[in-house]
Length: 77
Image 1: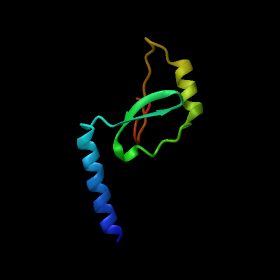
Image 2: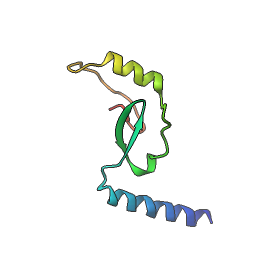
Image 3: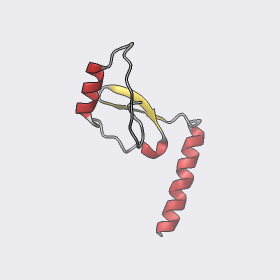
């Protein structure tokens, strides 16, 4: 059963990518809107890394140069 679930999920996510033209699904968290791939749609809570997000919005202003040396999904990039 697990293999069948994985195949169906993979097929559905592929269909979702085609439907969104690989631009992702729009989500909102920490008063910001962004697009994420369909497979990560449920990954982020409404208060995802709220402290980090607040710090970044306070410290990084237009014209600021910063480096994002991270991994995983790259949501802040």
